[in-house]
Length: 445
Image 1 (cartoon, helix red, strand yellow):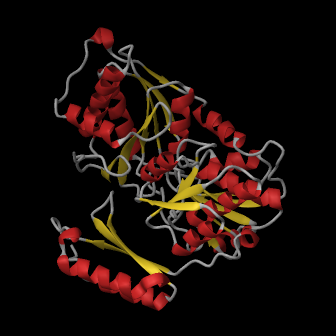
Image 2 (cartoon, rainbow, N blue to C red):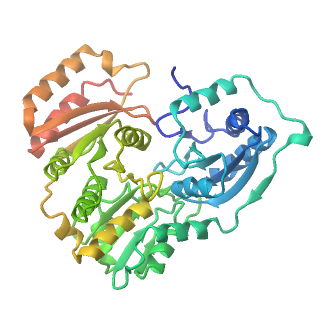
Image 3 (spheres, rainbow, N blue to C red):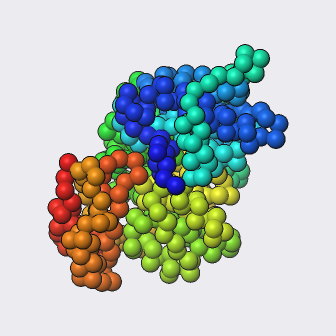
């Protein structure tokens, strides 16, 4: 059964256009509330709502709150919080569902809504389909006697700061490290600097002055080309860049950027060095070919999931693994957190550095990434690339020509009308040529 509204990471779009409108958010919350109550043995339910710093968050938060209350579901509000903080607080407050109002790394004029279970994991496809089916029944409000109530968790950010710190070894300190922290003017603007500072680091914060419009604007985990330069300008040892909802992390020293692939490899190697049980890891279709080989060389099984941290987590559970992630910076460490968490993941990396006394450059000097070219091609409405015979023939030819020197990947985005063409090749020029030839065959908007 195809979902009408939910994509790979909840519902997302441009504010003011369907579905990101207040009337849709109200109906979505009301319908989700009815589903939750039907599943509850007591017939009652409670939800936690957090958001990032977009100006539209106020509007959608109010609409979602009204929807849940009108369905007879109690609401706890957390204000601006990272996505993983909502997952954590939903669990610790013993609530049925967590709701995040965020479009992650997208510009301020986009927004989205995603749900977490009582265990801090994203809703499965089947539950999202059930909510959509409930939406088809339309609006209705319970009698006044059965309306829900709303409260605010005033110390939500402080609780999450303490949780993040608890994932860092008690016998270690960040004292002596100068860290540049880029919070993307997003949900972690008032949290991330405090976490590193309270663990002993000297912190130079950036992206910590949100105004509702500057989230992810030329900053954060999706704008890291100049991150080493910013680390040098801040006279720091390393930089940590989060995205708008702080579930991604990219790191850098003064000379090099370290993506999610590399950080996950570093964490895996440390677990093996300390004789921790680790039999394999999960990456995605986008994981660099060179990194995959390093996992195999370390004696670890490597599995590729579809792009999207929900699919990474799904495959991790199927294989019984605790480590997985994406090159974009989503890293899931299941013995520390239930979902991707940029701050917690960075602390695992920092712990390896403190434990070994080595820099990121020293720890990952042997990894030479295969040149990767990624082209996002907006396609015409109604175009189905899987049914394009000429394109499929081209893909077969390209894969055959590359052989064991790299790989070709084409996939449709789950959040926007683009087809992503990715080519890895040991020769940068060849990767660029092949990617361009494939992309040009896709009819553009």
